[in-house]
Length: 217
Length: 227
Image (tube, rainbow over all chains, first blue to last red; front, side, top):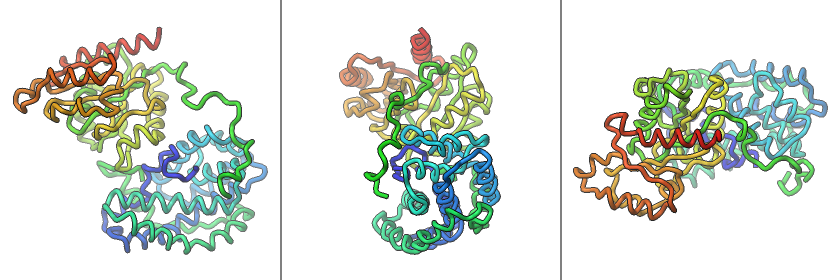
């Protein structure tokens, strides 16, 4: 439910950078879309999955711990507009998810003074639903892949059949995440991956200044 | 983990029915304004704001592909300060944003109402869409569907959720009917046949006074809600 495109958490308004990438021609067909998705998974996708898995594994969530996680994640997202979007998607997922799941981790996340980032909220609901860090990493992949592919289908009119095949192919590239999830779960938060992509951040800042947008980010 | 393995006690058992907890305590009436592209939704929003702004605190959320020029035009027509108007991105799916996944709109509505505190009326204008679009009851309290005579006089007969179920149906641009060969009387009677007694108002929004009857309907909705 959490990453189902029909779950009412506003995911359909997230292109995960595809709207901006399409404008500069970086994404224009099946091949460039697949390349883009691989790029996102190797950079911001991995960071998001790591934080999601880490939060899903928290056994004793406290306000101080969540504040530290928030600071560490924010430091990995240099673009203020992207950080705003991440908190907005987090807020929307929190509202929708809170009608279904509850638990101490959800309570702590809901208390975050500045609002939690989306991967943190996703991780919290995975934990509240009884999921594992592996589940969190897998859901994080699906969340990103679905945002990228559905936005490209809508913006560029790509064939949804070939895009689905590309999504399945790319999924195999992140099999390693299932192994990594165990270490992300136990690592100190400061040591989680910090491999965001600079072009992602630059394009997001530009996109946030457009006069007319179809997607939030 | 497959969904059927989720421990059952992790689901909320005894909470209130799902929906908006604030529906009883909230001050603002939330009104959805939907309808096909070009039917006059933005013009209606502008006219309602202009007619009602002296007596009511109003905010607007728009789902149109919205540029700063649109914002300027709307704030000029509505004489609302721009901080009372917010545009929501709909991810190329205007109907999804008002019906299936209202998260972005609900977030914008709540942020605006919180920012201004005293809001009486929140207008949510949908992006131009087809006849199957309708607002979720989780997003708005009442909704207005706007058609126009130039879009074809067979549209009310086609029906659809907007035509049949909207709390108010507005048939706009009646002044153009004679130029496009539309039969306004037929549109009104077809619409009434489909609407089970709910009201239909013909308008011509070439000037803002054309929206007066709609504004009175909105005011009556606010009064009814506070009673």
